[in-house]
Image 1 (cartoon, rainbow, N blue to C red):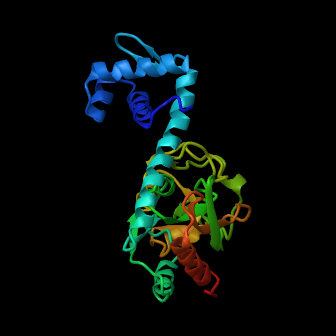
Image 2 (tube, rainbow, N blue to C red):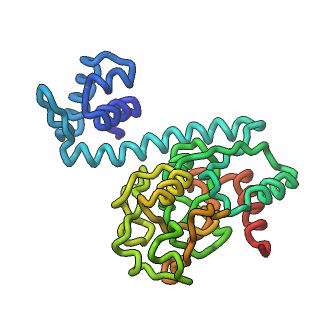
Image 3 (tube, helix red, strand yellow):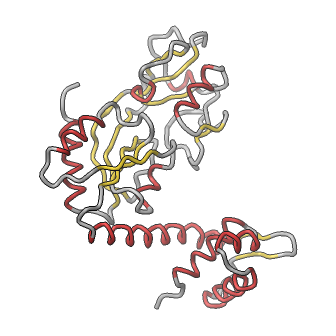
Length: 288
């Protein structure tokens, strides 16, 4: 027996994210008393308290935190299922590819050309996301495939194939103390100021000091902040090529190699995706 309807779960997630019944009601376009009644009904049915309410404050209980975490994933899965069902029915539907601006290691043109030669090729819509948001395009069904970077992007729950591996480099102002080095190690960067990537909740990059500097949305913003001396960064070399004249890239000899991957949701495997993935893998395997 299912204890919650999708609508009820969406109501709870809105309240849990806003931590304010009034704002959540506006967001959902419903009356606040109806929203409050729904949340009480959910708590009664589950037999747990999800929210601590006072006249001026709303907070989540541990049970509420758990429901918010898993509820977001559940809503994304439902939305993705609807999107995929509609696309499977529509024989003219486009294939949707998500990536970060510049996040293709210069392979995108070749991939699109290779895919266009296939008899089952569809029109490909390109969707650009922020530094950390592209994965969400796959999880909520907005995209069919995506170009992602490991270990930076969270690949859990996704299927993927590696297209390209490359070294990671420290991106430094030209007057930085390490700018003249042929290579550096992670220990050399331990006390450096690193950017905080907006939306990244944990450190998957393996770079010491990650998250102590200014909040960064994308690579162009990061490059500007490095040029101003506010931060440095460690990234795949291809993300910063061509290198601006005010910066230098120094290889980080003991950093894990970065991998550009073509990824798709485990819930969304069909022939059109297979065809595009095969095209991408073919292009990735070609000598540079």
